[in-house]
Image 1: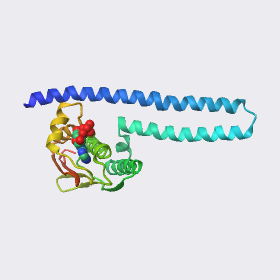
Image 2 (image 1 turned 30 degrees about the vertical axis):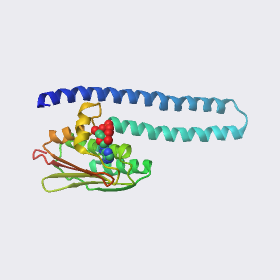
Image 3 (image 1 turned 180 degrees about the vertical axis):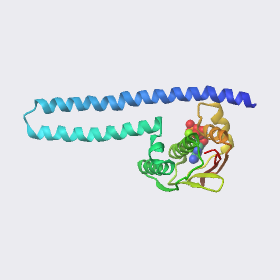
Image 4 (image 1 turned 90 degrees about the vertical axis):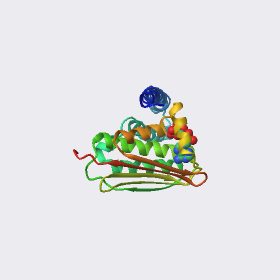
Length: 224
Ligand SMILES: Nc1ncnc2c1ncn2[C@@H]1O[C@H](COP(=O)(O)OP(=O)(O)O)[C@@H](O)[C@H]1O
Ligand SMILES: [Mg+2]
């Protein structure tokens, strides 16, 4: 594909991807949050009507649990939409938190070495780094069948180095990139395009049954 065709395909796909994400979010809101409120309402009705103190306590405890779960879910959804943690705590902490949480949830051994970036990345570049980590980690959990993953983020002299590794089944990056460009699977292509937008470098090395290593370098912007 020539450059403008690739761009056209990419923009079509990003619209499709955006629609997909919205559909998913709508479903999450309806199914999970809607369901939680319905249950809370039933519990409140029980508490209001019952004279049995035991039932009251059970309904109360159940409600507290639902509230905790829902708060956590809303936080996750907000993070998917916009990593506000970036603004509040910075890239390094957001990465540490996100990778740690995903690893814990998936039950795989996780190492995060995430060092604060003093300066030199524009707000857009910070978001790009975080999105790359999100996509890389999601791919590991979705495809790699790994028992370990490791994410490194550290400032070098000229830019930020980002490494996302796993010890999973591995794949052929070239083949996957082509497929990624053709279907609505935008993950790897999305990573590539984000890095390209900042004049960075991307390397994906992967070996069957040995795992995958994605290394990226995003140069500092002198104006920042
Ligand atoms: N860490 C990984 N381990 C094994 N396979 C991977 C990994 N990352 C990506 N892949 C393969 O590359 C393909 C393309 O990835 P991607 O572009 O993110 O699309 P998607 O995740 O939507 O399938 C995946 O379908 C998977 O087969
Ligand atoms: Mg993916």
